[in-house]
Image (cartoon, rainbow, N blue to C red):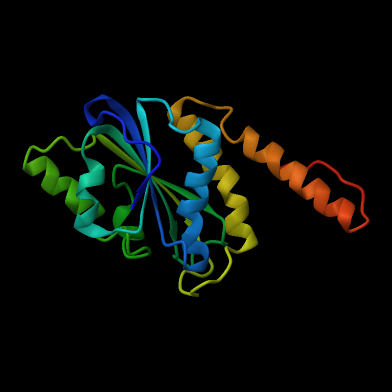
Length: 196
């Protein structure tokens, strides 16, 4: 587990919990989003916000559900019902049982929240999951597929809306335009701005 900033847990408005495994192809999405957030928010981020990266699942996530008013989970899902790169938004367990089991991180997440509430622990009042449909979450050392990589910007934009920072992701878009432009120049094609 990696924390980009550890703030006063009592004062946290939101914790962004980026789940995944950086060794397993598309499952590295959470790490990619956390890296972009670190660039976007600065290190350390604002004191009311915490970005956490974790490979944990189930009841091991209970600690991450405490001490913040809301928790926003970023992860991949493998439902087979949509194209890779599709972004799902699940709030407070809605449609949860349709999605359960599609990521090992989901098993027990809402159950852990229910246990925390039953024990009157300081768990989050609200949970939002931003999940991206993956193509491959089992290939060790595999790359993130292009569609899932492209979804990073959509996840950042959605996080911006949830956090009241609508401009979030603009730095990442600008950086990609510069990288894509340089790549096109090396390939002999003129650089052009991307519209995503």
